[in-house]
Image 1 (cartoon, helix red, strand yellow):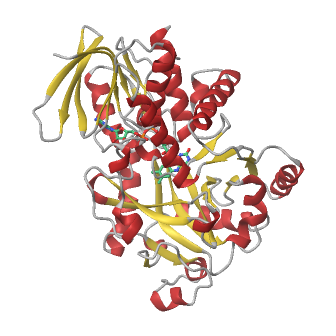
Image 2 (spheres, rainbow, N blue to C red; image 1 turned 180 degrees about the horizontal axis):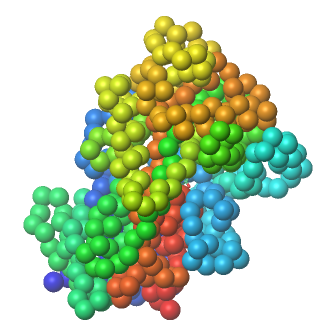
Image 3 (tube, helix red, strand yellow; image 1 turned 135 degrees about the horizontal axis):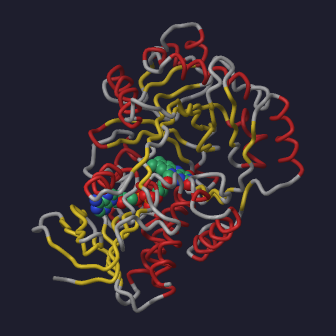
Length: 466
Ligand SMILES: Cc1cc2nc3c(=O)[nH]c(=O)nc-3n(C[C@H](O)[C@H](O)[C@H](O)COP(=O)(O)OP(=O)(O)OC[C@H]3O[C@@H](n4cnc5c(N)ncnc54)[C@H](O)[C@@H]3O)c2cc1C
């Protein structure tokens, strides 16, 4: 049986940063990093070229070297307030120090130098404008890699890591089971595509399976008496408008992270994942569930004339209901059902008039949709009244700081759902109750973005070599 010092499950940012920090601090350690997806140069999403999802198994957007980060918009959020809950595990000062350190690794491997939204006079003016209309502006500097630099930066990490002695990466390899005896981790049962399952021994196993592997990790936790807690579910739409509507916010901030508590329900509505000059895209979860997303390129030549961003309503369910992920999936399924399996698009004007957007109305829209496969429809058949009302009220409020947003030609794509995995109970260094078993990143319900996922990897590596 092969023996490693550390086996890492999942080659997303959390797993990659664990490996990089281990190899920087303890080059003698033997490290096996596995992923059920492909190595980076073999990853390609056909839908990005043809606009049509062919349901790769596993999904090339979510799996493989770089995980969900490979084709992401590569926005590195440089604030501990954004992209996860790491401050539940460490002080704010420590979180800031680690974010700065992880950011320096990104730039060492080629991330662009420019940081947007550093505090300047214009940002203060926007903050004041927001506060006049009961909008909270979250100030978060952003290093925008763009889809192309994100891919290249994470690829450079791959090239560096595979050149390190004692480091092995295995693609198309799934962790089936984590072996635990007497509360101590012993190894992993692996299954490489086309081969027989195999057991490898390890003193430490780092589970970093991302959102795609969250169900698997929850199962591992339940089988081994590791507690889990429900997270909230964020449901909403992706909004698309001409760049001009958002330019005065996105030019100084890159991403305007705004929060509004809706008038009728006082629900938290927030903007998320803003892509100036971007493209609305379709992504698929296990079982083929289509949900909307968005991204943009760093290079000016690849930019579009539209800006897109998500508007999400957060819901946290209390007893007796404890399945927020199924609730979100159910709503996404409704939208898929009405469109024949794809993404729905509606003009805000049609929604407000209580009518469907059809092909002819969409053709008259002055905002030209960037997701060409989106099917015109009626979001009021899909989203609960609470969500729809809260989104409309927030759009109206945001129109004060981005005039033109509450326009009849604003496009709403549905649905955007952010499922946050159940939070796996871990200590300050992300070690679970099982000795030697760490759980990190999005899959452990701790993070929701590249930067914080990367930070969890750094923390674990330092704990392993301490
Ligand atoms: C389209 C898109 C755009 C995004 N844009 C941004 C952005 O601009 N900025 C930002 O901060 N965040 C963004 N995100 C989110 C960001 O990509 C994630 O937060 C981040 O990748 C999480 O890192 P992770 O390492 O925890 O998990 P992941 O990146 O999801 O990686 C987990 C890996 O584990 C593998 N895996 C799962 N289970 C197993 C198993 N049992 N055995 C072996 N391998 C397994 C998966 O194949 C996957 O490769 C975006 C996400 C998407 C989908």
